[in-house]
Image 1: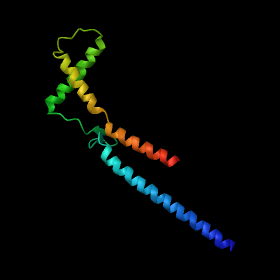
Image 2: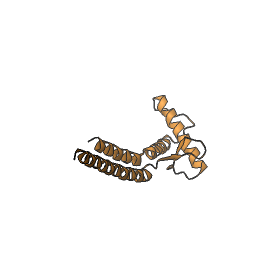
Image 3: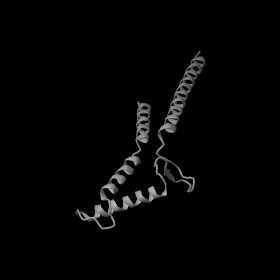
Image 4: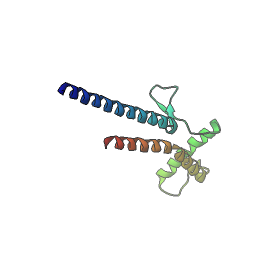
Length: 128
């Protein structure tokens, strides 16, 4: 009788472990699906191994890229001067600041933030 009860208890433990594993697999699948839809701001670099690059910066071409880089440099120059003086080569400080702020807003990874919130929720659920 005791052997039968031990076997029965062991079977319950195995069944319980299977349920837990099945639940974890389901949550992992949901997490992977969420990652596929949310982790979109940077992607693997095709040029350098173990490096990432932005996937979202939209430019009209090389000239637009160069204008944006110049705007970033000009804003940095203006910021380091600490006065209202604008160097002669900075022709449109307002435009440079606008371009810089537009780029910065594109760099904010809101989708990744949503994903991390979901991961955090699942991890906290797992603890309890």
